[in-house]
Length: 323
Image (cartoon, rainbow, N blue to C red; front, side, top):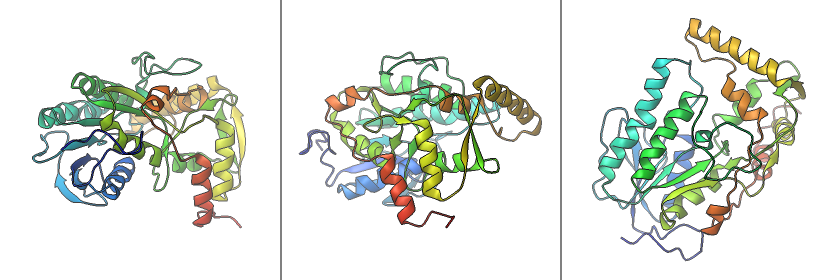
């Protein structure tokens, strides 16, 4: 089946009647992609430990099994170990087993099928840059997640995949970004490290659009984000307002935040519980990170959703808990 050539440049390729395998379809991003593929007319096969929101479930344990891709026309890989684990060798092994070794197993099964591999901007070297292009160094990651995603991405690129690098994905059903921000409140204050910075964010709908369009793109890496970067502080104030939770931003020196993260990390090694604060979390909020999406735009990518859309939806759906 020919999956290249969309009627709408930059839009989904023609998936009508195609068999599309979506790994990690029970997760936040995977579920959005699976729904979008089904809406585009595809027959969706959800590979993972749990069923996805649509289509047929085929059990797959990325840590040990080669997935069954018999009859599949396109593979979109979103299965991943995510989060900020307790630092150490055990976390490195666990994350690598899914994000790198699982990729190797998937590539063996894909055997030349079109593959879209969803990566993360966390693969980029954490350093100051006015605008981060796909040529930014991919090393020096400060979390097991970033290191293992970078390892898996290298395999995917070597295998000829289209690799998507979103940053801080948000949207309906978000289990990570918004809940973490709300948990970070202390009394009526939300601590934030350092001065305001510009950040790229990625609406899950924009990621899903890119994932369905990407089979028609040349192999290689592509940054995927909303059309414009955001002011970090404006984002945080917008989240607090939309959720109806009173709170004001409390600026904390970056050095103090890093020290607190080091203390929390040390404590986590004793308790074996995930640290309340990590260096990775501080870096995500304190360092400017704006993705250059020009390469994806050149293929017709046009991000249609914004954070304002999502916040308005939260209010309309009654997420607001105050007033």
